[in-house]
Image 1 (cartoon, rainbow, N blue to C red):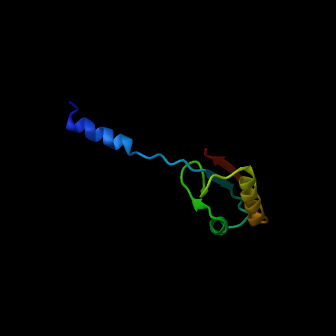
Image 2: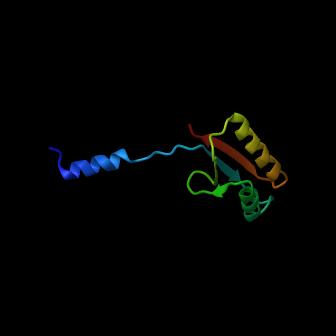
Image 3: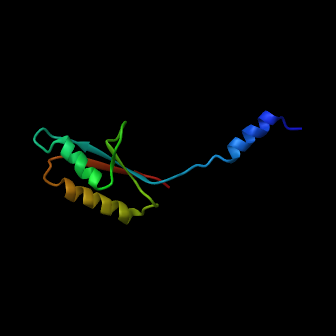
Length: 96
């Protein structure tokens, strides 16, 4: 006979759902001769990026799994949007 506690634990483990989505992380290197960080923040938010904490400055959460062409298109849009702001950026995409 299975104890009630063990049945509850089994139920909890059986209904756990793991969601895997693609995320593109962006790191920005600012220059004192460039645009204000608040201007860069606004520009990136208009592209769909959200501020992040930790190793990265921003993240872009893909609604669906993206392919390499989608990621390159996003990188192109970032490059065009940040042009002239005298900042460098690095993108890193993770996911399934």
